[in-house]
Image (cartoon, rainbow, N blue to C red; front, side, top):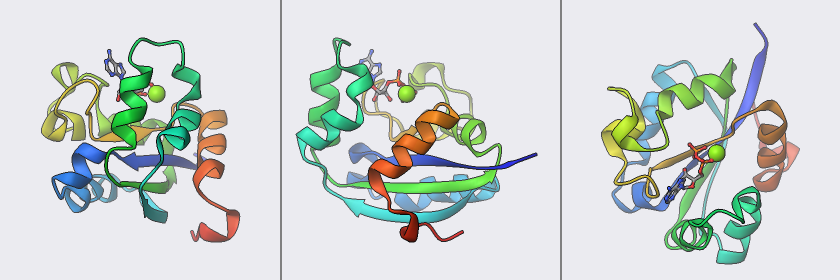
Length: 140
Ligand code: ADP
Ligand code: MG
């Protein structure tokens, strides 16, 4: 099984509630390694660029304002099947549908303020990692 890398973001609702460590414990327990990490406060324009794929969706403006409202922690997770595994540990987008033990089930406040982002495919993972990190900042 190939080792993959994926982009994870701990969203403002979670950094505000001091949940960074608890969330990262779940990734590490699942065998994912944090190989790059930075805490940043995105501008609304930067959040808009990151979520450009959703620009036609009705929640786009709300999503961009939320992502720029408080600091986030952007990180690269590495491991076997890291892209799918990260999404399994995160749980469903809407916490009402998330499985027991997942991050979103335990911590998310709503479908919008759902604590974590994770890339959904190899192409988006590569693109999203390079949005936040230079190659030299990723130390496996
Ligand atoms: P995921 O983050 O699980 O990949 P999507 O890519 O569909 O989910 O959506 C991106 C983000 O947009 C979600 O994580 C959430 O923060 C927000 N979002 C999605 N659907 C809604 C909605 N119906 N209302 C408000 N915000 C939403
Ligand atoms: Mg998505």
